[in-house]
Image 1 (cartoon, rainbow, N blue to C red):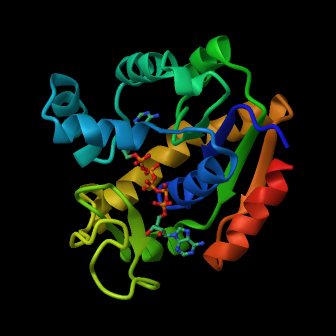
Image 2: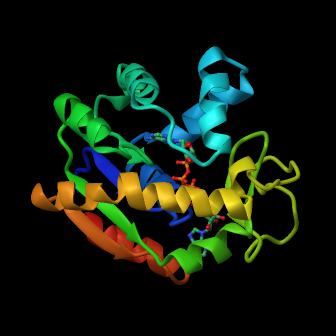
Length: 208
Ligand code: AP5
């Protein structure tokens, strides 16, 4: 199967990153996560990172022009020549319209899950402060990252109040993209609740 450009769309905590990473590894196509790119900028203390942090800490979207500049630059890199797995981008109609000018989208995987399940799931998410690997308390054997052995931590924007705000922002600003991509005939909705391997199977079925 030849995968080109795939978008993972869905609310915070729906499993976009988890499944985009699996698909990226299986097909050898880079995963482009705007959330990870922003966190790298914050870690490196750049001007862009400091500007983005104000929005991220409040659970708001980072302005389109910052995101589009960053994505545009990343897409110039040679590893993106054969397609990308977009994780958490686009998130607004202006972002989707800008992306449509640059690349053709083959498939949008819409990760569907109820808000109540997300709030519960997010309490158990742990991330590695060094390599960025994401895991969950329900299947972690201990608190160490299984890739680099560092102690996993709670992500800064996973505090319950911020999660609720991110969900409100998703419903107001990102959910309209479901209609946008349905009209283009590329949207595949996947039930993102349940066992992670079962969800992975549904994602692969959506891609073929
Ligand atoms: P970003 O990092 O993209 O966060 P998000 O979209 O809110 O999504 P998450 O990373 O929280 O969740 P996910 O869907 O990837 O789920 P995961 O796989 O981790 O963005 C952060 C912030 O950056 C935004 O709020 C915004 O401010 C800014 N930003 C980023 N992109 C932007 C853009 N394009 N425009 C504007 N602003 C932007 O899974 C969650 C947890 O559940 C994990 O612990 C995982 O192990 C676990 N899990 C996964 N699948 C299952 C399963 N089936 N069952 C049980 N647990 C599971």
